[in-house]
Image (tube, rainbow, N blue to C red; front, side, top):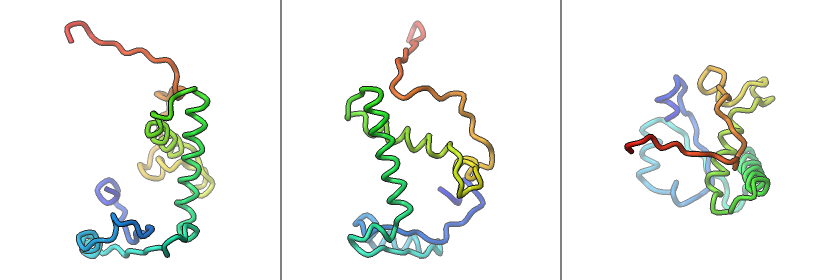
Length: 129
């Protein structure tokens, strides 16, 4: 996906030793693409600290959004997805105050469509449908 959507090439993939990454088909795919595969030591999340911290931040934001909107935990996936969407559209120091979305797409994201998470919404169904 990265290489199809940008001119950038994936050089390295780092992950924990999850079973989904530990099979010959995946290893062969990475080898064909020339991607180095780094695995962290089991039970050592600090080796993948940046990703672990991002995950923690997303969980905290999702929990806060659900509580603030007084919504059911059944909407957890939507809350995490929304938190991630928003995170990618907020400027960060590491990118000289650009947003991750801007760094990816090389254009400033449009935020005009954003609404408060959990706000009241109406669905319009056109007549005859």
